[in-house]
Amino acid sequence: MNKQTFKVVPIKIAICPESENPIFGEQTTTISIDDEGAGPFIVIEQYPNHQTNKISFDIKELVVVMEEATKLFDNYNEQIKDKKTEIS
Image (tube, rainbow, N blue to C red):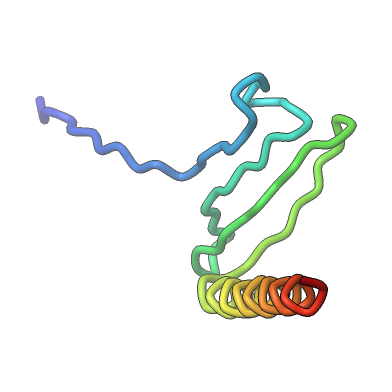
């Protein structure tokens, strides 16, 4: 008889406030990896009002989304900093 071996592969994480249930909390965000046969992609889900809101990205697209989101935050922070400087 062959001895079967197992591996552990994390495919989903939950991000939520400490006080919220990570499985079905309304402020919970889950990030998972999925594959429907054409290669892996990232899925980001939230469950406000017990409804699923979901967006999916392949890894190359996610990199671009993160780069652009970082630029937006950086630009926003610079604009806020400039306005605070002008007001002072």
